[in-house]
Length: 345
Ligand code: AHR
Image 1: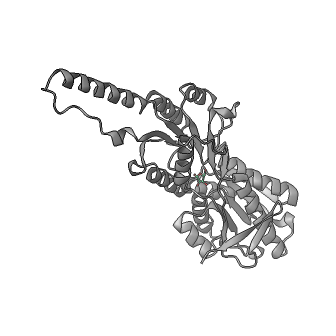
Image 2: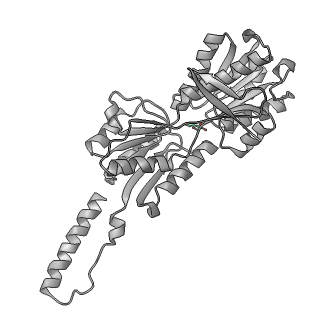
Image 3: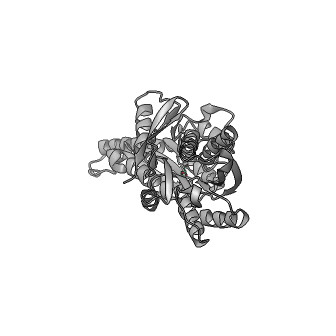
C-alpha cells in the first residue's frame, strides 16, 4: 500500500504539472482513492487439515474483505512451515501493512519474524502461538487456551469416571495427538498428562493423528491391535475422533460412555464439525471441548485498534464451553472456576 500511495501521489503531481502546461491532458490517470485506503494484510494460514481450519479460513476471508476495507493476500501453507516462511518473506517484499500468521508449529520463527520487524510490519498471531526468544517480534496473539481445554476435558473424564464408580487404575486411555509441536497439541496433551499424573489413570499410549480423519482412523486401528483393554480415547480434534470411531466400529467394538460394560468412550475437541456434533448427540462422542475458530472479526478488531493508535493486549483469549449429551454432569470446575456443560440436543 505504501508503494502505491507514493505512486499515486507522483501521478497526481505529474498530472497537475502537465495540465498546467497543456490543455491536451484533460482526463488524467487518476487512482481510485478508495482502493488506496485499503489496509493490505498478508495472511499465512497453516493449512486445510480440518473442518475447524476451513471455518477459521472462511472467518478470516470474510472479515478481512474489501467491503470491510482490506486488501487481503491469503496464502495456504499446506501444513509446511517452510511454505509459511516463504509467504511471510513475500509479504515483506510486497510491503504489506500487517502480517497475520497462524503458525503450524511453535518453534523456528525467530529469523523471519526479525525480518518482518526490521521491515516495520506488525505481526498478529492467530490461533496457535510461536516460541521465540523475543516476544516483541509479534504485536499480539488471539486464540484459545489449549491447555485449559485439555484440563477441562480431563476434569470431565475424572468427574464422569468417579460418577460411575470406576477406580483410576481401571481407566485405560490412549491419546490420538494433534500435529506434534503445535500449540493445540502441546496444550491438550499437557492437560491429559497432568491429569494422568494427578489421578493415576493408565495412559497406554500416544500416537500422532495430525488433526486429520485419516490419521485418526489409522492411529486407532494400530492401537486396537496393540491393546485390547482401551476404554477411553482422547482425540485432540473432532476429525481424528470421526476416524477413530470408524476404526473402533470396524474392529467390532462399540463406542459409548458405558465403559464399565465394554464400550469405548471417545472424547474430542473443536465442536464445529456437523458429524462430530451429531455423534455427540447420539453418544458416540461423549464430550467435546469447544475450540472456537471464528477469529476473523477478532483479528479485524485488533488491526482497527492498532490503526487507532491503541496498544492491544498481547494475549487475547477466547472463552469456550464443553458439549455433551451424557447425563449427570452439568458443570466442571478447573482451578476454582466453574464451567457449565452445554447439552447437545
Ligand atoms: O489449532 C487449532 C486446531 O487446529 C484445531 O483444534 C484443529 O481441528 C485444527 O487443525
